Structures are given as C-alpha cells and as structure tokens.
Length: 156
Image 1 (cartoon, one colour):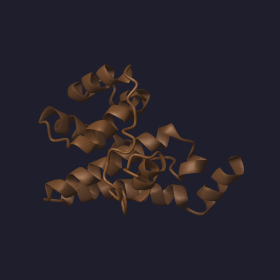
Image 2 (image 1 turned 30 degrees about the vertical axis):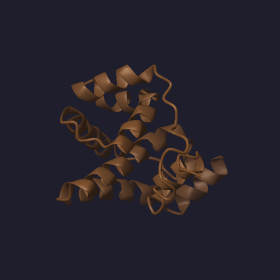
Image 3 (image 1 turned 135 degrees about the vertical axis):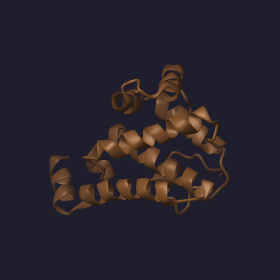
Image 4 (image 1 turned 180 degrees about the vertical axis):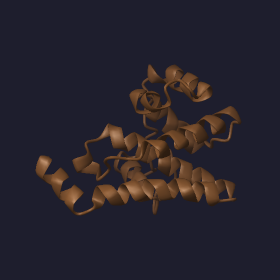
C-alpha cells in the first residue's frame, strides 16, 4: 500500500485530484444552470466522502484542500435549508451521513441544518438503493459514477 501511495504521489495523481476538486467548486460558483450546479455538488460531496471512506492508494485522492471541503458543506447546508436536493442526492447524502465523521469533522457544528441532518442519519444504516436507478444513469460521471455502478445501484 505504501509503494502504491508513493507511486500516486510521485506521478501527480494526488495533486491532480486536489486540483479537480477545487475546479469542481469553481465551476459550481461560475455556473448559472441549476442542474449543472446540482451535479457539481454531487461530485464534490462524493470526493469529500471518498477521501475518508477508502484508502488513498485505492482512490488516488489525498491531501484535499479543507477550504474546498468546507465550502462544499456550506453549499450543502444551504441546499438542505431550501430543499434543493433531488432524490438521487438525498440517498447519496443519507448514505454519506452514516460516516458522520466524514462531514462533522469539517463543519464543527457551524452549519446547523447539515449538522442536524447528519446527526439524524448517522445512526441509521442507510442502505445503498440497489438496482433502483435507470441503467446507465451513472455513465460519464467520473469516479463517482464508477463507484456507484460498482456497488450495483443501477437496474440490471
């Protein structure tokens, strides 16, 4: 694992993911299209979660900018406050919230709506919605799409 991690660092994979993460946030702020903003938020949240959920030697994600993570959670807090999540993001977030440390460690209870949401869902075992999304709904959605396809969320 250490050798793989060293290889990823030396080949710039960790740095590239850090830049991609920041670019997603910039694209979110620059976008005026609500559906694009929602997709960018989903990708940002996935990277935030995956960063802590799996070892970096498997994901290629390490050393993310904490200001980008916090900005993402601030946006999510607003989206929760104004009920701007779609069904897909709702189940993603319910699943991520079961890893409460992946969110609460960054927000320090400063984002009231998100903190409440995470605390309410942290103790619930949120099942992955196996075979509940249309086939190919995760195509062309980067590592997030590949992850969700690998756990079987799309119809057979």
